[in-house]
Image 1 (cartoon, helix red, strand yellow):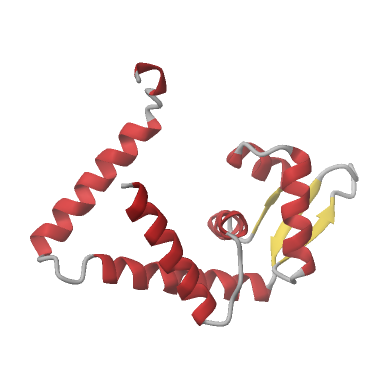
Image 2 (spheres, rainbow, N blue to C red):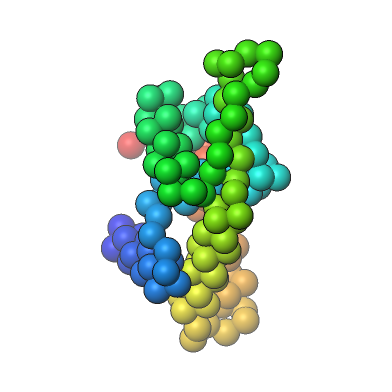
Length: 139
């Protein structure tokens, strides 16, 4: 499974690069989160969602902002509170990521029958649920 996971990540990255993009997995996850949140979110929410320290989040966001993918703004009532918003360039990056993921998903199951695709999806959802239960102490 480790090799498959590595290969999937590599293929997605290659797909993004082939479309003229360059983005780290961490940056991609944050852009995707912002997209799912309607285009903007509080920096604090990003930190909590990804379980990342404030200093690490600040660094990742600074790189995204420098590249033009996001904009950060301060709350007028509390300058310590930051809102992070997607830019047009950020939205275009999400489109590239989505196309790359779609391409990898299609390639991954290209010789599967419809029944096999359905079973594969069911099994992946079960595996995801198992991991979300967090039974790490049973190893």
